Length: 116
Image 1 (cartoon, one colour):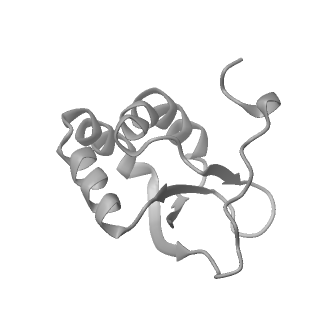
Image 2 (cartoon, rainbow, N blue to C red; image 1 turned 90 degrees about the horizontal axis):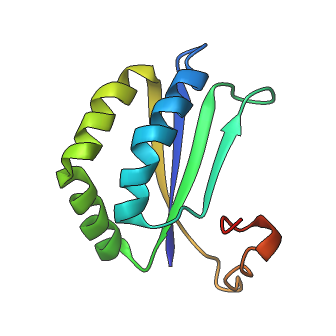
């Protein structure tokens, strides 16, 4: 398994607008092609500010490439990018691999699942 760790630094004051556009237009099409993210977090008042961090798990780099190619070919994704990109000041992307001793994390407890 690999994890695609993405950090976007937004222009000051643009976080609420970015989140609105992402929630309404970005997340639906992204999750359709990439699946559910491993995590999606905000950095708002400690450390680097105005950042969103999201992580996506894949079996390997080939699966990542295939899924991202399908995402990039989707007109809904391209429309989202046109609207969201002006909010972004800087993007950083890392591919993480697990240490040899690490076991996959346990499933998210039902209390935190999206089924409710």
